[in-house]
Image (cartoon, rainbow, N blue to C red):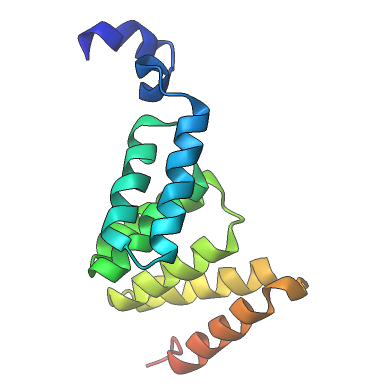
Length: 147
């Protein structure tokens, strides 16, 4: 890594230092998407992890990486990457919902409730999000905040 110190100091990504093109990163991301669609979650995780490790921070890559983890029974790591995805794009409704699911599975009831409420707020007035609104309403009804 010493040989890349100047480039990294100049805020270049590891991909740029290694000469990995944006097209290669995009192709790798698309490959991860296909693997996840085929329920090949461990392979999708590896490919999305590669893109996340060497490329610029990207909410959709963090989301794809996180989406593999619950299928591998790693809800805590999924929550970490969903959190990163939300930090990179706090209007990505799917991320708010999935992070709420992870927090719920981890027993973080209040955090899950807040995330589901935020999901509803993001979806409000957009009929394209009707399915996620219904799923969120169902979760809020099944797990009210009051004991």
